[in-house]
Amino acid sequence: RKEVEQDPGPFNVPEGATVAFNCTYSNSASQSFFWYRQDCRKEPKLLMSVYSSGNEDGRFTAQLNRASQYISLLIRDSKLSDSATYLCVPSTGTASKLTFGTGTRLQVTL
Amino acid sequence: DGGITQSPKYLFRKEGQNVTLSCEQNLNHDAMYWYRQDPGQGLRLIYYSQIVNDFQKGDIAEGYSVSREKKESFPLTVTSAQKNPTAFYLCASSIDPTESSYEQYFGPGTRLTVT
Image (tube, rainbow over all chains, first blue to last red; front, side, top):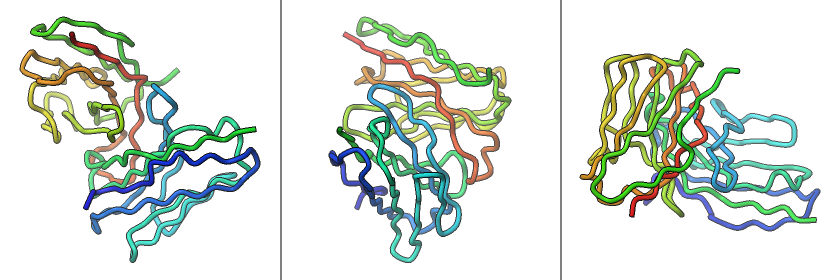
């Protein structure tokens, strides 16, 4: 089983839609979780950190289910500028141990 | 402006040559990291450093070397021993390497092509 599993997509959604991505992780010792977004041929940029059951920041909501070992990212009212690849990143105790998923690609269209 | 800089953005080398990628940060972060990203794959950790004059191998260190003589700088050398050096190389830093809650921030990356 991969350490981090994400549906690669692409998820094609119209502007204004709500879209959700799931991510499963295999290491039950994972303590913190991050969502990064990565635009084509650019560096990953931190979108959201999740330390407890979830986090909300504007149109973005992350929810963590430790029992089932999955984390989700919900994007409401999608914008064209949300088009990117979203990386799920669990952390396992030290900042040196981030495990990057391969990402889910989102394409928002008019 | 605080941030992480990597240079150059694009780098072309002939097979058999060593090449050094630069990474500088002015965020006063203790920890620095090097990753490579290949198409369709997640980021893989090459080396990391939690403090000046100390560094550890990551998951794919073979064929690479690093140094950490200054807090601000963490250069990566891709040696001729690296079998598949063509990749997108990303440098990152974080405030405190002992806290899992501290996020990593990335530089813009260097795209290395070896022919």
